Picture 1 (cartoon, rainbow, N blue to C red):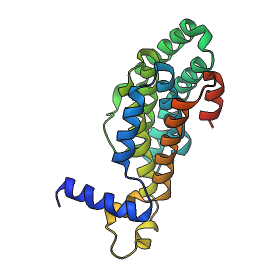
Picture 2 (cartoon, helix red, strand yellow):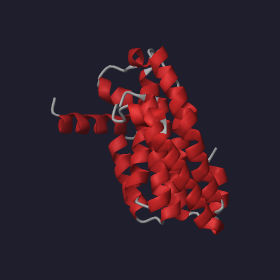
Picture 3 (cartoon, rainbow, N blue to C red):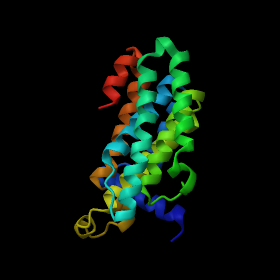
Picture 4 (cartoon, rainbow, N blue to C red):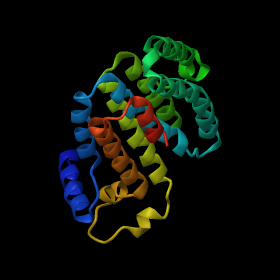
Length: 216
């Protein structure tokens, strides 16, 4: 079946099931990111990356080692961004620390020796979402924030695919593609991204207060 046709069929099924299509969420997030300032964009990316790190559950042994190693490198980088967002009054100092963290991350063994375009690799999503977040903090580009959100969806899809019981619960008349997208892990991530972007668009609190809310 043509991808566009399959996408439209899935969209109709998801609407009937009261679920969201990731492409619709992606489009909404992109539109709202374009209107935000640099710091809220970075905060959106950081929140998505935080969930990738906390939700990573490696499978076979080699992937487990990669996930642990990537997470060990990504956590300091992400925490530096969170700290920078929380202390926006000293932006220059925070920016220097993020630059240094990015440099260390680029020089890490796993960044230098592994591919970073495997949609089925949780380790890949950990590494790249953290890097996109840091780059968004440094440069303010909405694209980096959007890419971090995409990695959040992909990581959720990996976690959902590990649920061997879910396919057997598919109702008759619902395609397997649409049913995969209705998994609670995926829908929770999509809902959270929409909640985060709406909070960052509408909230009038200072960034340090928002960081505490988004980081949990």
